[in-house]
Image 1 (spheres, rainbow, N blue to C red):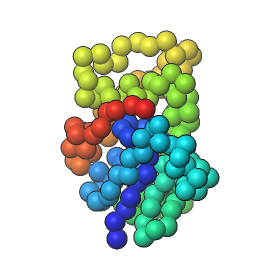
Image 2 (cartoon, rainbow, N blue to C red):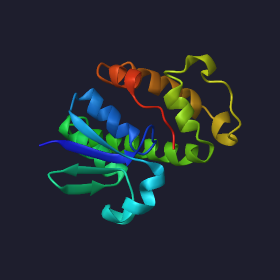
Image 3 (cartoon, one colour):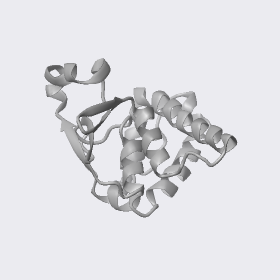
Image 4 (cartoon, rainbow, N blue to C red):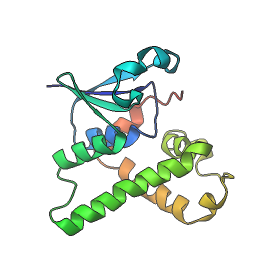
Length: 164
């Protein structure tokens, strides 16, 4: 049984939380990297013609949140009662909202890659009202804490920062 995570080559906002969970849980997996220029040729083999996709024994699970929740459940990170489960859901959907808000400006790539490229860390960027909120500082603190976790720290140090 080998997990396979399908996504474009390099760093991707929709797949990165799953990679971090896999690193945190020390869950072995194979990364199936799809060159961006090959996507039109292969997308019809994927559910909904979208990635990321988790593959296990020839079966596919699409959607980044479903993949994150699958591994969070395996790692017992979804909470031990209904209240904690609701808080975990709120956390997951906050990540999704943040990715959606950041995507137009590709700030998510800056947040993720600055942990390895310290020379330009957290310089102010013009991304409208979003940056003027406290969310950017919260994201910085959160990502610093997550990226310092055992397993995650090692993954972040060696991950492929290529962007498509």
